[in-house]
Image 1 (cartoon, rainbow, N blue to C red):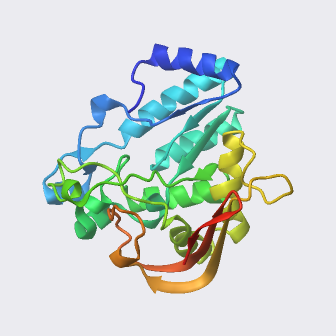
Image 2: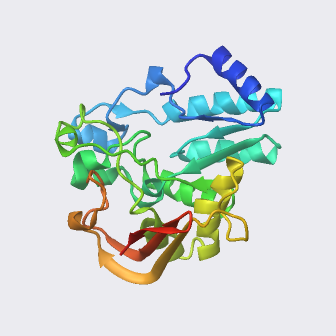
Length: 270
């Protein structure tokens, strides 16, 4: 949930910065955020209320203003629109201490995916338009977007089986994050593998000031070993999670995790 009160978030950002940390906010202006999926053609076609992109953008702009005026660090979660990318790019050029992240579903899919995956393509912020998807990719390429995260949100099948307007937001994302990024970004020449590692590992650690995201003596041995050339169709049977709510089912992906190592211990083996 967002912090709707501007005075409260301003005071929080000031106090948290004093501690050497930062506020990381889900940006959603509630007065214009009611709806099931992105406002536009697909919402109209399905007869459901659409979420205005301004819901994300207005609150992101507010936090950027507070950060700039008071010389504070702030982090904006899971951005999804072209305007958000443009605002953050412009703010960084002015020296504002703002960082941000996005998720694989925002550069892999558009709102059209709701027509085939239904509630498994419903999340908050919602999937947007093609121009938004392209802007997210550009933001990743030019360094505007600092990190790729999953926004992993598991739900039971009976919850997601509800109507689009009443089903909960969110999809699972851990297991598809790497292949989705290879398929949509690396394989298409938008990013290198080193770019991918930076965005998914090194940069998130640096934003949070964690001693992670690097392979070096003394660092935590958190490693992912993967086959970059493996190609397959992702099926429900392949999902390790207890929850299966993902629009990636049935999609052709490239890149497959062979081992997940946490603290030097193998936690997953393909």
